[in-house]
Length: 196
Image 1 (cartoon, rainbow, N blue to C red):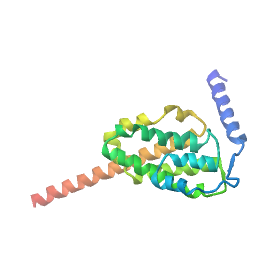
Image 2 (image 1 turned 180 degrees about the horizontal axis):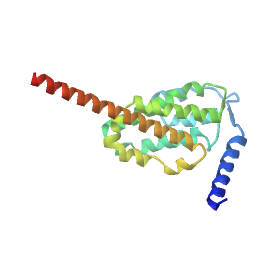
Image 3 (image 1 turned 135 degrees about the vertical axis):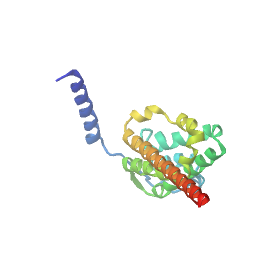
Image 4 (image 1 turned 90 degrees about the vertical axis):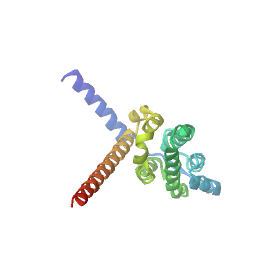
């Protein structure tokens, strides 16, 4: 076996064993009440919702709520002024969509932290697309990429991030192709109508 093949095999074994033997972490409310102020934070898209969520159903710093949700929410807020007006509207609407999507989970008394991570990542694509992500890519692409921490692509759970990024790119490409085709169809129809 070549050295490269041995290294690949070792990496695969490490990743597979980490995946197969990773213990499940459960967050439990343990009597902590649902706070109406936390639900209001979710409705407003406030980053404070993530702190509320973690207080009630603690998964810890290595799971979605603090590691990803709160981190990126705070980053979007701190960098908000660098975006165009449309970009700022997108950030506000997408963040509100993502926190509102987690409200029902916040109300639960028990949650598997791994399942919560999947649930939360599954809200990103629809929340981004439904709130105009593809439309702001032209003007705000630099600001969007500056928000993203590249090291997140190489951490535990990075496959979810890669999948989300790929899904967003594919959806925006489809929208662009559809828009270009529609514009071309309209232009051709106008030319035919004016020639007739």
